[in-house]
Image (cartoon, rainbow, N blue to C red):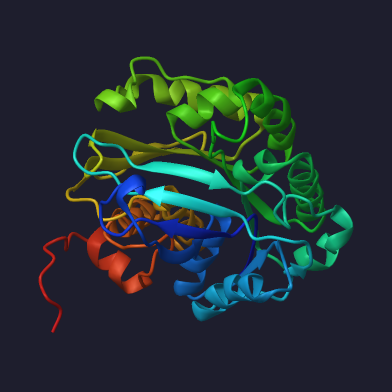
Length: 340
């Protein structure tokens, strides 16, 4: 399957272990970013995953390209130019101390890119799926224009479009997000997001849910899903359910609704969490793979939840697991025993 993702890949500088920014004198270096993480997952599952972005011609830009190529992502459609690669700093929390992210991404190549940098008609030709997230239109007005142009081209070529709402409060306000995102929803077939994303990006909130306290009430979700489908024409709506007991202990499950079946996945207890960054992206990658290859949406959701549960055990943004490993966990093997 040919799958396209569009977004910003960034240089991630993270403090070693659980050290704080103010006490660290070095950083661990990896690359990552919402849609890039999805592309890596899909390449690992055997798809022809293409990542679309713009990166500088210098060595740091090339290093980002190489990080994608290392895991089998096609980089044919990456434009080169501009001055900088976006950076984010990560301090990994523990127990009751939350993780913290500081962005240094203003003026990045993709944030300043124009629609003329890409031939979206060519990019979408022969594609089966196009995925984007709310981060891309949030980075700049240019990013929003790129996202809309890509969506229009995708629909022209009959490509299924998925969106992970992915609200980032450090990039825009709820009012700014809704002004852009509600317009873009007309192109979306599969909408993915947690309860905070749905509220802040689209104005929908299930009652009785407070992720910060680990409190989840499923009664309101089906009604909200149906309202979202009616208003925006989604074929499928999906949400992850994260129960945050601490920075290193979460409950993890998901819901999916296609207008007929409302399905809840099995629940995973993730403790300890090694690295939760990219957890939602690994879910999106797993869901896309599942919807393309499984017979039912329930099977697709179980694959996605298992894939994202595994991601929480892996350092870095990328979910470096095979489809076989995910299938084993989804099938009930969560023992962690050594595979010989």
